[in-house]
Amino acid sequence: MKMFVLMWLACFGSASHAATVGQVLTYRKLQGHQIVRISGDSLDTFLSEALKAIPSLDILHRHSVGETRARVAPTDKEAFHSLLAHSDLEHDVEVEDLSEYLRAHDLKQQRAASARLEETCDESGCPAPLKSSYMTFEQMERYMMDLASNNPARVQLTSIGKSFEGRDIWMVHVSPDGSRISDSDSASPGSVWIEGGLHAREWISPSSTLHLLHERVTACDSQCDLDYYFVPIANPDGYEYSRTTDRMWRKNRAVTTRSDCGGVDLNRNWDYKFGVGASSDPCSETYMGPAAFSEPETRALSNAMSKVDNLKLMITFHSFGQAVLYPWGWTNEPIEDKEQLVRAGNAFADAAMRITGKSYAVENSAGGLYFASGATDDWAKKVLNAPYSFTIELRDSGMNGFILDASEIGPTAREVVAGVSALISEIRK
Ligand code: 0X9
Ligand code: ZN
Image 1: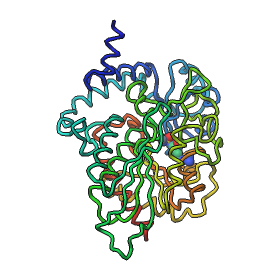
Image 2: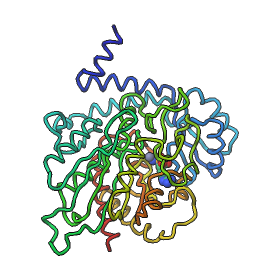
Image 3: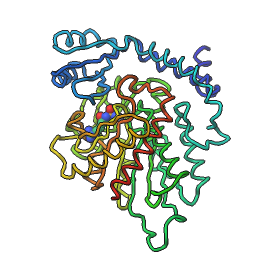
Image 4: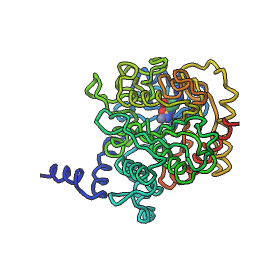
């Protein structure tokens, strides 16, 4: 009976009831999980050894030299701390129990929820992406549908394929604004592809992508002669799973050869240098999958991106770490056109700094971060020859990581809009 009530609430109950049920599950999965901050010179060697001993160790970021945060499950705590004790690294447990940390964070969010009342995003309409809370996948769909039906001349919404669990992967094509282009130069000078939400738990990514989309359509000013292709939520199954069941979920929801470990890291599954700097263990957070493009999500994305004419710029938004990363990620051999990539990256970083005071590092993926192949950025650069290809890691720099307060949605969106505008101006010079 109890089970039935829970299922009923999850499926048909009011939004707040459903959210409560979801959160209970989300947090239960993370009971006893620790977040440990580690720093020191021998960090890289330590991490590769630790990952060999504990494949499911979750390295949350590695952006600033010599420091990282890792999530460790209760079953691995002892082994992990013994490895740490035998190293010369500094370490401290920042979060003792992630489920309690999340519950406390939620209480704070609920107190700040009054602004939510002023925003609409339901069956009656969804005029703009939300700023006071992270949207559900359904709300995102609603917003994209409303945007397309309110702007039929410029906005076209297409499902480019289905996710593993059968959700649509939506692409929004924003065509050049005809009224602003003279007949003599009516051909688009190029296309821009923006990917959001490839990693499930990085909620600020789909959120910022939707805000950027909204700005390109409703406040089109000087850059509206370009073709824009947005996929705001590239991994809808993972996103929903991270909302309802496991807040720290990163991968898609594919069933793997291991019944106890599901999901493929979609940013290791692209068909360029597949398998270099990725894991073949389904229990790893960076599991590359059984083959390149084995996943419906990466197949849909790559097929659609391949059809875009004159692709000038590809940006995939991730979090966290505040960094503009340029290829390559699979090797730290310097890229030929490093200078122009850095110039464009700096334009983003300078604009973000001007608008909100937040600092973004501009660095090479492999050098600034770690070797990782099979990612969107390297594929777009190498296979599609996109002159500009970036992974942008959004807020924050590590204080809250993925559990970024909803009050940061608005400011992050402003820095993304300013940053992307400046980057596009720079590459058009
Ligand atoms: O590891 C990743 O997939 C990205 N970082 S994240 O923390 N969002 O998971 C960075 C990918 C950078 N690009 C390549 N390594 N090619
Ligand atoms: Zn990511």
